[in-house]
Each structure stands twice: as C-alpha cells, then as structure tokens.
Length: 114
Length: 115
Image 1 (cartoon, chains in turn blue, brown):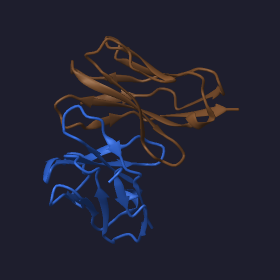
Image 2 (tube, helix red, strand yellow):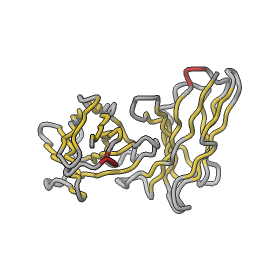
Image 3 (cartoon, helix red, strand yellow):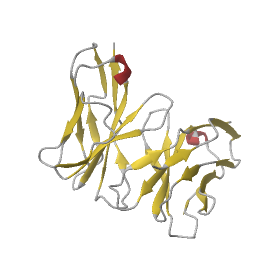
C-alpha cells in the first residue's frame, strides 16, 4: 500500500478484555516495528520483526503483550486482560530493511481502556 | 542505553521568523543516525530531517536545517521562515547503526507558530 495502515484507528474496551491491533506495512518493507505513545510523550519501542521473525521484544512491558507477523507482512499486536494503564496510542512503523533506513509510521491506533 | 533529551517543552515563534529546537543525546556509539519527526495535531508522525553521524555536513531540507555537533552530542533543528503549518510537536530521535532501526525518542517540544 501507499503507507503504513493501522486498524482500528480508535478502540474503547473494558478493563479485562483482550484487544488486537492490526498493522499493514508499506509493500516490500522487510522490517516492522511497534511503538507505544502516551499522551504528551515520545513514542517508546515495543518490538520489531524482520520478515516473520521477531527480532527484539525487549520493549514489551509484560507478558500480557504479544505480537506476531506470521507471513512476514501484516502484524498483530495483542494485549490480553487490558488495564487502564494500557491506554495509549499504539503506532506501527515499517522500513525497507533493518539497517539505517528511514522508518515510516502509521497513523496509530488509539486505545482507551475504561 | 541511549537517552535523548529535549529541554524545551514548549516554544512559540512569530510567523516568518526563525526558531531553533534543542536536542541532546547520550551514547557511547560512534556511528548512528539522528532524526527530527513532526507530529501535527492530526497525530501523524512525519519525518522532517535525517543526519548520519559520520557526515560532517549538516543536513538541510528546504526551510529545515540541523546543527549537528557530534562532540557535544547536540542535534538542534532550525526552522526558517516559520509557517502556521509548522505548528506541531517535534521529536528528536536516535538510531544505532546495525541494531535493527530502533528509534529512541526525546520527550518532544511543542511549537506554536503565531500569526
């Protein structure tokens, strides 16, 4: 596609529910990243993939968070048993390769846990 | 671990004037990349400018330029002829080379361009 596409753009969920956020990277981009951005702060790294392989998940805050990219294209970030502190914008990004390339961000998915 | 600091939470500038946003970073790496991203009210994340640490020449993109001082670990953004559309949050970001393109962001500077 022309840009990084994320869905849903807005999600309100009740505490304790599971949510799945989807990312469709730019066509041909090998690397895919997930970031989380709280209001008024800069994005924080969560995890990234090269093709289907998860290369680094050191930024995932706890084991309620997981991500997958089974076919090396679309990725899903799943948050289980959501808590209010999970409320944030979740941004996906992609780049052509894993070394020194510009990263392009999607418009993000706003998650509100009530 | 790398850290990126933006010491100016908010700034304002009159339309058509010039403004400089500050960014400092801490790293033990010798080769890396630095970026400025713009986040307008729409919350998009737009790349403004990029600098490779091995290049001595400061990057420029139209009205945007940087002052990269490697020894001082400083990377400021200058916006010339400010326009109302420049109103946004600006984030400075650091990327190690050969480390998966992961970005470390500063806390951001909110810039308001006044008519």
